[in-house]
Length: 399
Image 1 (spheres, rainbow, N blue to C red):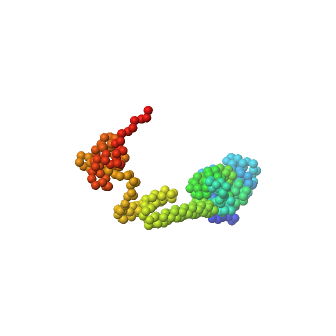
Image 2 (image 1 turned 60 degrees about the horizontal axis):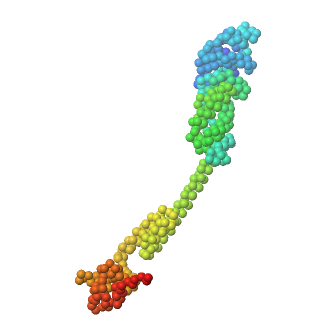
């Protein structure tokens, strides 16, 4: 099987038991793994009794017998191969090879600290559909990409499920397996999270921390037992939805268009009012009445302002023309008007009706001197035929 590295797989078909560069010195079996080494398999299956398997601090050693798990050797140990240390070996009868007893075992060294990065991304074909919470009937295709890092936490499960069952023999094949599986799972999880949290496609970008934490939690719960791996960090770089972006763009265009039409309507009404105002100015007799009518009748704030403006203009025009020479209408006919001499001075003129009131209060008597424009001189009121009736005695009531 060889050694798994991040870029290639090395094989050891011609390795001798004493080749120090390959992890075998005399009876010592070991693997000096570098940071890019994931798994290394000892290439021989005749493990001699008494050999020592050296396990470094960043490793675990896993022993198999024909695909069956025999033992897991913990980090930082030097284990001598014999039935006392590995009880399973007691089932084997001693098989002599060159005078030495050996066991037909597979020995795997697994790096449990090195972390590998997998980049993931899903497009429209992944079928991730996210609804708009404002209209759940409408669903939009979402795409996303990111990466995550993992390490092997359960070497026996990793070897049994991936290397043994899936027949994955290189790091590249393991990475491709995880990547293909991740795309479908992450796409499904993003859709489920958006539905449960009532997130729109546009909201996913702002909720990346929550999404990546939930995805990480799901993967660790599923993969630790299934594949023996643990995600140490998950990153959702971004999500996008061209369909939803187009929907938002069309919605904004609709709002802009409505605003434009509303503005055009206000502009049209304002233009009409200014047109009325300009015509009213040419007719000064309209005055503030026209301005008030415009302010009250147009239904827009501009109407009141134009009405006030028009009233001001009309007022200015009236002031500019100066005071007009106005002749009052004739007073209704009140009969002859008489002046009355009081204390040697003329008073009045008074109508006959007014003189009757004065006679009643004693301020006008038969001997009062009166004059009107048809008379040449002043005369006593009793000598004027029109005024005689004022002083006639009131007849007694009929019994």
